[in-house]
Length: 123
View (cartoon, rainbow, N blue to C red):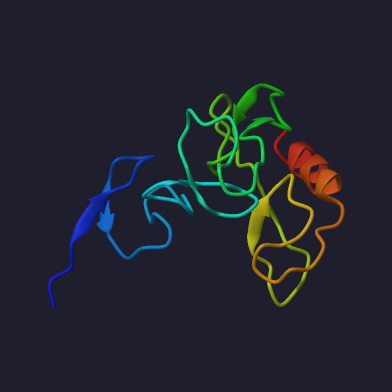
């Protein structure tokens, strides 16, 4: 069976079209951008998500610059905007401002504490 490749929008490497993440740069959205609250497709110029109304501009917790919320990394400092769900069975990466996990539905507690721990580890 032939496999077709498509360019990752973040690192521009050619990867399998059915990939859920880029094996080269690690992006969880290699072929498009998604709203961090409802996962509907969004574009970098959008102010709000057309599906849920969430604002798509956010302050990076590391560099405090306003960045696009539809991607996994800050457009200014390049650091990840994702934290892990504390549910041990889930442990999926979530956007740092989410209050509940989009995979398991459990409340995400201590997001600010997770960000502080990451900041301390990167100094």
